[in-house]
Length: 85
Image (cartoon, rainbow, N blue to C red; front, side, top):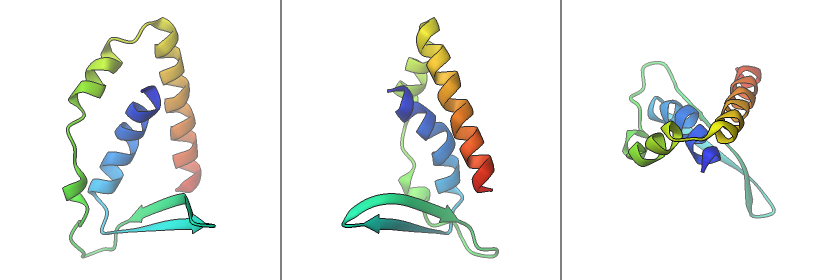
């Protein structure tokens, strides 16, 4: 559950601002995705927006251990995203 919330927080804004997306596969399995934006193009993935209210409410109710895990996952996600940029 925490993984889904972290993913939602960081990936959803990226997808919503993207004008293109690509999927990498290996032996028929998805191994990665990339989204990007071309200057002057209209975003095309806004239809992927979903309501994440229940996930956000669950984040607000995390206990201390879960909150620590959430912070660690968030830090790892931020670090990975920074390296990608």
